[in-house]
Image 1 (tube, rainbow, N blue to C red):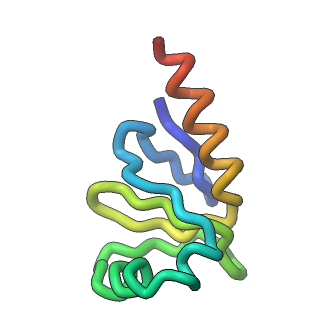
Image 2 (image 1 turned 90 degrees about the vertical axis):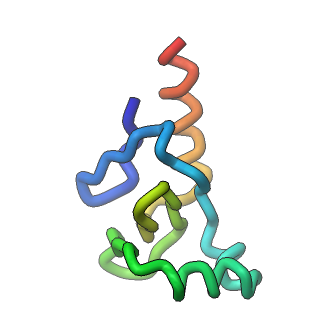
Length: 81
């Protein structure tokens, strides 16, 4: 199944490695360092982002809150069975 993460972008639920909220990014130097080193970053938010979705090959800055994305991914994962 797929999760809509913003701006008409769908990501497979099984490809999602992490969903990180904005506060965690600003409070962790390790996450900031990871984001600076990653070359496949896609900014989906027109303003400030609310969460970050990490997949195997890309990092997405999403305008949707991490809680919303987690609920969507959980709901879809449960329906797969």
